[in-house]
Picture 1 (cartoon, one colour):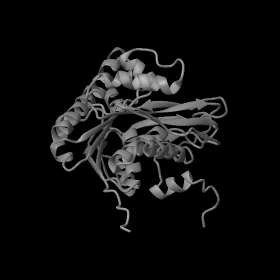
Picture 2: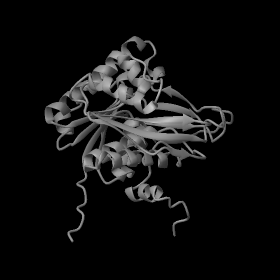
Picture 3: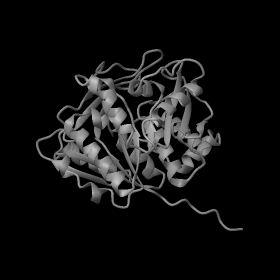
Length: 344
């Protein structure tokens, strides 16, 4: 019998901002006591870390301040197996976000402080996209970058255009954050809709689709609603081959049900619904899901396996504090097998 071949690792270029996350201790309000727990984060950085953990070559393209915070971010990402292509910019700052964890019926909340950051104001001409994308299979980008201002949006559009020219597939996570679009709310729908139309894989649920293209997808059967929302997105462009999202039923901050969905031109594949109990940290779990979908598409998993794997990645991410998915393929597989006992 011939051995089962190991799938070829992919090369994924992720483009986005690295942030310093400052979180209140579990159960506390922000600055209830003078303590904050620091860690690095950022949607595209989270995806890059997860894919590196799955054995792929994941590079993060960004811009960092030329100061100790920028150096620490660079060191942390490299320690997670993610090389950075990030210019060190003098006189700029690192973007921050402050997390107030939720508890019981009180939801978590995020406060951003990222205006004027090294990434947001970086000159788009400084990115050499043909060189940065050389040999890449996928470019992973998102709507958060589009929300950061004209310079970041220009760089994002140039990255996507270069990826198309080079035959690199594009994954675009809508990641609509209303607080980041303040003063530009009227522009958000059109900008995000246009960016989705340039992607091969779009991450957008029913609410995001309604915001971008109109319609009401929230009534009736949720799977059918997602399918209808995906069809509306497919109508934007023949480039879009897949639309993926999670569906969440919230009983409390610690108890939720999670379902993953991926739509394609022929239909929808839906994961089993996972009961999440005693959630440790919810932030960054959508990025873990996104990385799982990209991994499945790179390695040629059947769609039913891809959506199951991606949802399991999100499940794992709920169990560990911080935004990064610190898990290997074996970790995800063992959790899916129900191996919750002590491993020795």
